Every structure is written in structure tokens, then in C-alpha cells.
Length: 123
Image (cartoon, rainbow, N blue to C red; front, side, top):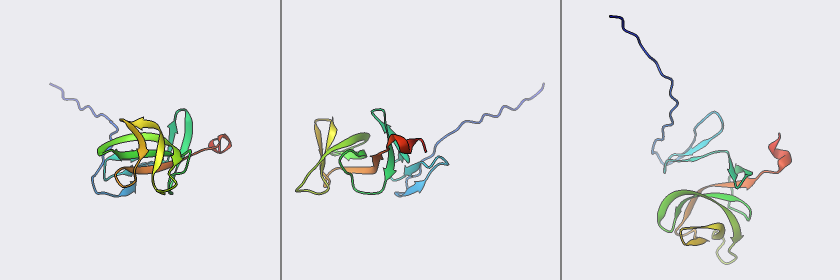
């Protein structure tokens, strides 16, 4: 009887829970390892391209929400309006559950993306 060996090359992604942000892939993706969510250097929201920035959200940015109203999840929403009295709170363009108000004391996000101009996206 002849034995044969079959080898398969199956790409897998491994997330380790160490609670920090690390570079994850050659494409420039970043993994938020603490909650097992992937944060890429670019994203698309409603057909528009966005790039990762390291700053507070501004109107028009997309935020990757990781916790909202006590529920852990993975949502992307656009910042529609900033609150004037609470500097870190804002309104989202679409509701998550029953609300579109992001309360910085209770809710959290792991990434902020700014819009990419069409001329920049071709570079």
C-alpha cells in the first residue's frame, strides 16, 4: 500500500488577548487585540473610502464603536454632530439599538477614520 501526504495551505487569523494595539498584517492592518476586533488602516462606509487617524472624532468621521449602551459589539457609524457641552460626546448618523447618542462615559470606540478625498485615494 502506498501512502501519500496532502498538505493544505489555509490562511488563518489569530487574535491574542493581551489588551494592546499591534501591527497585524503586511497590508497595514492593525488589530485591537484586547477585544479581538480588527482595526484596518482604511475602511469603506456607505461606498466612501476612509483612512485611520489617531485623534478625537470630528463631524464626518467614521468611528468603530466597540461598546454601546452596555453591549459589546463591532459597529461602524459616521459622526453626525458633536455635543457642545460634553466635548467627547457626539451623535451618530444611524442608531445602534434605540439610540444614536454616543456617551463617552458609557460607550467606547477603538478607531477613528477620516474621509479620503478622491484625488488622495489614487495616490
